[in-house]
Amino acid sequence: MTNLDNLCIMTGNANPELAKKIASHIGVPLCDAYVGHFNNGETQVMISESIRGKDIFIIQPTSQPVNDNLMELLIMTDACKRASAHSITAVVPYYAYARQDRKTRGREPISAKLVANLMTTAGVTRVVTVDLHAGQIQGFFDIPVDHLAAAPVLASYFREQEIEDLVVVSPDLGGVTRARIMADFLHAPIAIIEKRRPCPGCAEVMNLIGEVEGKTALLIDDIVDTAGSLCEGAKALHERGAKRVLAACSHAILSDPATERINASVIDQLVITDSIPIPPEKQSDKLVTLSLAQSLADVIVRIQSHRSVSLLFNHR
Image 1 (cartoon, rainbow, N blue to C red):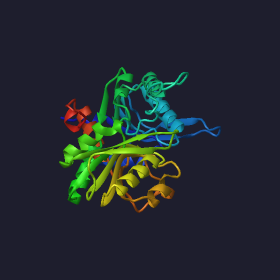
Image 2: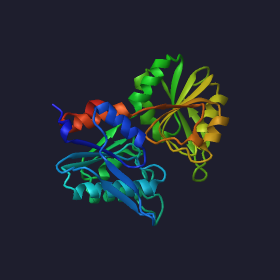
Image 3: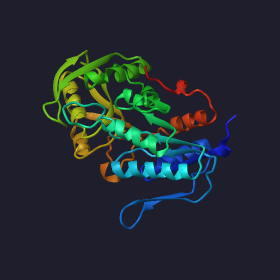
Image 4: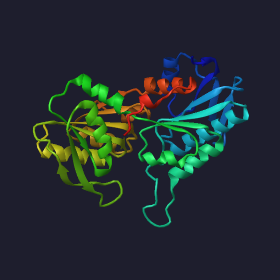
């Protein structure tokens, strides 16, 4: 039996719409809390109701502005800890700094580990996240991490489209596992784009492993940032005979000039989740947004009722 009386959903300014949807699915109101700024720009948090002994779930992806949203999460956590909350779960659908998970050259930081340390030190007792760029980041925490996959939500959408001759494509060698999971959901073959990066943020397609000629190609990635890799991959698939190119990703950062690139590309449709809110100036007719609210609400209810959440995970 789920004790919803002890459950408290709180949100910062990163994605309040997602928090509202999650609270609505669970059937509880959002906690009465103000998250804003003092005149000097410092983050201000005021919780207007008692949360003593409550199980707090803070919905706060660390999307742009990354450092502001991260500080909001840390300060909200500290406020909850000092208000005698029973537990504090950080629901971080998009985990920032995840691409800085190791040193690739001398004198570089491992920022993903630093963020994990900051969250734990602030008082977070559990983390719920979606499609970490590097799965091993779970090991950066010494607290439980529930790593949710967006694949079931994305796959459900494409199954409804009843696409014939579908082939799932990984945009690089590192994304093969992700593509395989999606391909298993859709009962489709996979192809792999082999590429090298001459410089940060740019990609050069080198080779295609697999067959896409005369088929509908579905490019799968976890993050679309400037969309350079995605659009170059789509162009390569089109040149190799794909009759249609679709794309899907878990986290749409869409840093400039991503929207312009997507609109000018051969991609028919880019299916994303609402882990990161898309501002009006970055909207496009090619974007289709699916909500993670139901999946995250299910996880929160299962955590609160001490039931297994592994059935909701689809990582291999």
